[in-house]
Image (cartoon, rainbow, N blue to C red):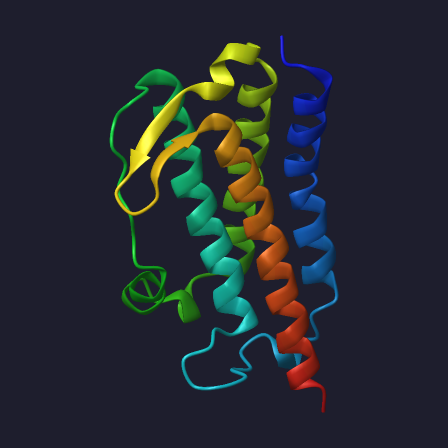
Length: 158
């Protein structure tokens, strides 16, 4: 069973769904495809990125648990945004993917034993990443992009 402080961290991770949904509910229709500067993502692209990153994280944490010590792949998020046509990916479907990946991962994490938190994979750029590290990285990932969403909205204001 996970210690109480780790259960709290998983609950905070899961709360990322509500935080993203709240942010999405405040995006005016005209702001979705506003690009604040060349090379910056639109709000729509940020949300698609969150879904893709969550899907990658979903697979990574499972690999940490089932195949500890294995190597995972790094990816170029900007190349993904262009090559995978983030601007034309349906946002609501991507958000559904984000929600289900995060819910399933939280459920998995809540059923771990305390010792499982030290299981790890090797990231080619970051080195070893444990299950505990994963939890912090992916919680901060949402927080960072929520700040980016806010910055985009402030730049968009007519």
